[in-house]
Image 1: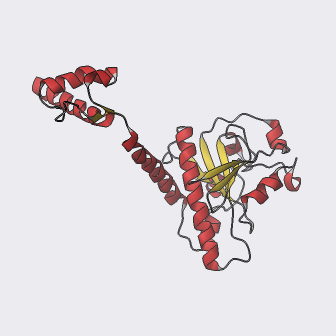
Image 2: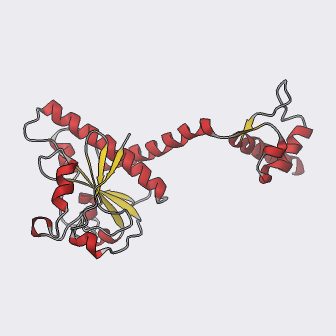
Image 3: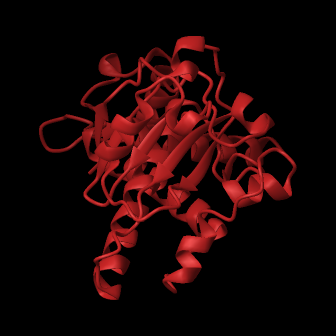
Amino acid sequence: MINIIEALVTNNKCYQAAIPLYPQGIMLHSVGCAQPSAAVFARSFNQFQPGGASVCVHAVAQADGAVYQLMPWEMRGWHCGGSANSTHIGVEMTEPSAGMTRSEAAEQIAGTYRTVVELFAELCKQYELDPAQDGVLIGHAEGHRRGVASNHADPELLWRTYDMGYTMDGFRRDVAEAMAKEDREEVPDMPRYDSVAEMPQWARADAQRLIDRGALQGNTDGKLDVSEDMLRTMIVCQRMLDEQKET
């Protein structure tokens, strides 16, 4: 599970410019240096021009699930050197330190990958973004090929260097799967209805017809015990049968 840590870089020129952003997508980066700590980057970005450059990213993710949020999601960042700054949230992945073994480095990369998959899934839900739609979730290198970002090779270069087998197409699929998994996990908490009177207004007339036809019956206590999903399915089936009879 990710842990979003607010570390707003209020001293950064980009933060102080406070240009609004209406997120149409998210761009994935990797930091391009041997540093697995997101806190280091949070401190580094909290100056007017880090390294003398006008740059700032929205968040930096690390392998243990921590995400340091440097800017509000709805504030324009300067993370890609192109027009995608005006459309995309920018997220950096940390990279293995120079002292790590290859297996330790692979574990660090895999952990950071899991972190950004979960983060992107949350942001896609928050801003109603479809990870499968063209151009919504892109890497910095893809942004360059599209003409909306500067010439960088991340994050694929990091993944290829350590033979991780990750690709941006695979990443988009993993984000979509994470979103679907969250939806499935929410189902057990869906309210259940024991009577027509407890149901949403839109379902009551159809539910009563189902009861009158004997298609919806209660348990031994007379309680219907149906969820909203169950109601929708039964109502759709009932309407389809009615249409078939009319034809």
